View (cartoon, helix red, strand yellow):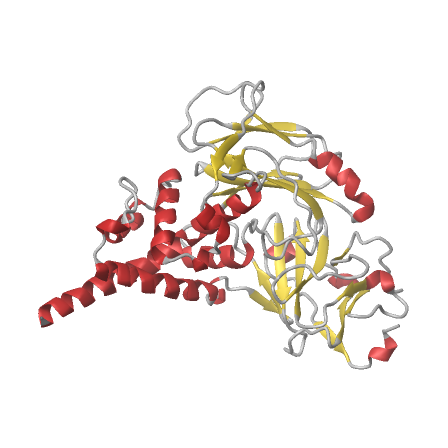
Length: 446
């Protein structure tokens, strides 16, 4: 009896150990698929519901938008989920006449593997063939080939917009970006049924067996090279890319280990912010070296949890702060100033912005529908010496409403986005100024 008890404990412990690693490895894969389900579902009143790949969707970014955390408001955007398992997809981009745009392409594991746009390919018109990892064939002349590491890819398009007055022009350009089949005569659209389990549940709320079943199916659909030996160990807990995941073939001890592993692995992911190792600057956390992750699986999982769709440093660098320059939490109960000296304004080749989010990382509703202050903000007022003050508070400032970033009544956080950052940002020598609390609010409030 004692021997049997020891054996049961061994199997459960072994499954727990492997399950932790497998969950962390596969979490981005599953959360990417849930995002695909949420974003690409067609008319939800039709039963059964269907998803569409290889076609563009155009989300309206507002406080009601909850598809991803911390959405950016500097651009009008579109997205398409690509199914490259059978055929390539042709991306056509127009001449944007120098206007910033980027078409970011992300693989099924959340790695950014290509950017098409102002920084990399210029702003002239172009045609690009996005092909799957195993596709072999001949493409029409004049196409630049971009090979995806996985059969599923996420294409996120962004076109710069200076705000509501410029939005129509940005959308006009956005709608000229198209997808078609290589023969140019047929639609590349692929229709599939939804996975209702994923559509109705957050990833972390899935039971262990459902999570690992979905993960295994996605690994089969999206095999990658280079991780074969790492992935093979997961066969001991039923994650088999040849035969799939069948919970009926697992013993009770293994299932018990996987149940514990799923709960604990998510806790590890959600508390692993140090894996990102941000550089600290006056209360700001400057995030670099994201977008691609190689074998940094825990880092990849954490970024997928907190900011799915991160791009590479050369395209945009993000800095976030939850605190003022004294280390106190930012709160709508107080008034703040973010002051940039003239020589401290963010050095970028494109543009920069400061966006405010509530404590759940969503946009903050306000009466003037302003969610960010940027160097392109209409009417932005600089001081006589060329410096800049941004007022972050619930009520408008007395003399400079154009520089007002409305705050919520409770805790909030700020994100500084730096598009096409200069060398000083990439090499870590640029210091972001701290957010200062203003003690005498009468001086800056109406």
